[in-house]
Structure formats: structure tokens, C-alpha cells
Length: 319
Image (spheres, rainbow, N blue to C red):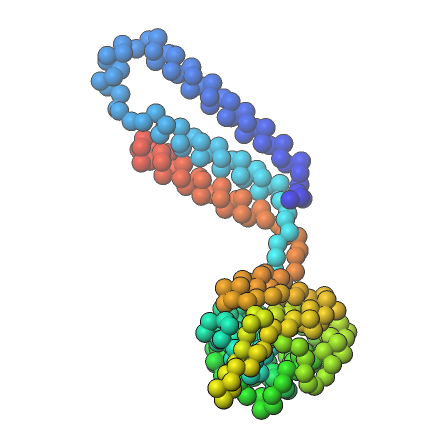
């Protein structure tokens, strides 16, 4: 934390002096009461109330003064704020291997639920789009702030929705980049700050070379976060025969490393949700220094109201 007017913090010495004065005054009053008052009479005429109550209004009042002084010094701190036009593209693998039941109830169903939670946790002003990919890639929902359309798109995710089998990670990246560039009228010349999130369980088997697509993402300054989802023991049933579909995250890791994104591995629904939460804390934000004096002033006013309420409640007078 820094201060725009640090010299004003010297006023805290005045608050400290008031605290010392209050303590000294209370001790003097206690001595005088014992010295000059008949104790039996004092016990009868003085209302019985906990001793701490009489100090609460004064304590809150002094805390209010300290907070107002801090606010008066105009503190600054780094604050995370959403980027304007921030865009997040979520690309989900819908190939046959995503039907493996090594994740309850299956990889694709778990991925859909986690994606739904992820987009709901993003700020409302973020533009979010959805891409489905298998042997090819297609934009199911163009990036926008319409969360209802996004939920409907996530619900439509299903095996075979792209019409071609395989795993085209490169096509998913390229298609996502194209959606980002078509966000609005100025996106082609002034692209929005964007992130791409790729969720898959296997290596690339068709379409564009993923590293070529990663190069496009680097040129566009769009980090690609990748999630390798599944376990080494995954399998799918085809005609009564179990086909092994072990997870393979090497390509996804290479893409993330090349583009400056993060590579994550998840083998359960809970781990996948945790990964999405971790990604959600970084996408679409920037840090900037802001004046946070209002926080201290606001809290000081709350303490002032507490001091007034306590004084009226217990002593029927204002401090």
C-alpha cells in the first residue's frame, strides 16, 4: 500500500494523544469516585451495568478518527479489475474418447458441468464463447455476455456434434482465435484482451498442427490455457468391446508453454472444477493502482454509527 499524502498520517499522533487522555481521565475518575463517595450509597444509586459498555462508544469513536485519518492520507493499492472487452473462449473436446467412464459419470458430462460453473463464476461483463471440436472445430456460441445462450450451447455439447471424429486441437485454437477477431466491428484491428481454454483428453490426430495454431495465438497475444482431462485407464465401449483411451497431455502442455498459458491435469470432476477456478482468477483481469480511501472512510462511518448507537442504547445520550 502507498499513500498520495503520507504527511497527513501525522494526524494519527493526535488520535493517539486522545487515547492516552481518555485512559488517564478514566483512572482519575475511578480514584475520585472511591475517595469521595460512600461505597454503600454508590452501590445503590449507580445503575448496574458491565464496566466495558461505557468504553465501547469512546473506543468506536477513536477508531473512527483513526480510519478517517488513514482515508485522508489517500491510500493506494493494487486492485484486480476486469479488462474492457475481455473475451474468453472455451473449447471442449467432443470426440468419442470423451465418453470414457473413468470420470463419473463420463468425461464429457463432467466437462460440461465444470464449464457451466466456470462461466457462471466470470464477471457478467466478460464476453464468453464456446467451441466444440473433435476431428474438426465449430463455434457453438459466439463470444458475448449472453450467459443463457452459453448455457444452452454447453448443453448441446455431445459426441459427433462436429460431424467428424478425431481430435483437432490445432483447429480448436484457430477457430477460437477467429471468434475473438470477430467479436465486434473493431476487433480485427483492435483485438480485445482474450484467453482460450482448451479441454481435451488426447493428442492431436487431425487438422492443423497444434504448434502452428499456437504460433497464431502468440502473434495475436492470446495465451492458451490447456486442461488434460481423464486417467490412464480410461476406456469406451464399442460394440461390447472396451477400447482403451488413456489421457495424453503432451500436446496440450506444449501448446500452453508456447503461448504463455497454463497447463493443468485433472482426473476427477472435483479436480476439473478446481482447475477452472484457478484459471478464472487470472483470465480477463489487469492490476492497477487505485485510490482506496473510500474503504477506510466508509468503515470509519460505520464505527461512528456504532458509537452513536451504543451511547444512545446504554446511556441515552450522544458521545
